[in-house]
Length: 213
Image (cartoon, rainbow, N blue to C red):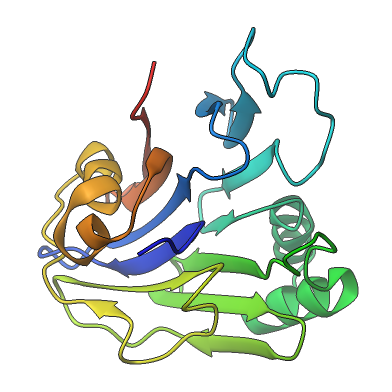
């Protein structure tokens, strides 16, 4: 099944909060996840057929973190959500305000904007999305070893049935590998790259992974 981009938020088997983002290829396969400072960017691979594009739907920040929060998303809404959190907005208000303001991506597919959020201070996870017809923002209720997920196609709205119950990744690198090809994610076609963060108890551990050179 092709589901496009994926956002996951969960607790590993040790109870540590984790979030992940994965891109699956279709129109623009030549992309990578690269860490720069306290963010991860989706970038076009140099010399590829996609390198001439300047679309904000192709290259963008997909993960930003601080001592308290991390935000993952499939587009340019990552940074505005993070800035609202820094300004004192609650996670719910930060997600709702940005999603409603930006709306879905105005491409040929009306691609939903999807996002996940970790709040270490409150020990809470959130998922949110906006489609052509709906806006949904929900706290994530999972037990240890579970990851809830949303996708741009097929599963764009948070729902209790969209939960991986075999989430056993211990560190950020393992989280990347898990969303690329582990458990339920192995049934989602054409992965090309992923980024992930995991709470270590003293902040976030970050990892990125490309599936193609």
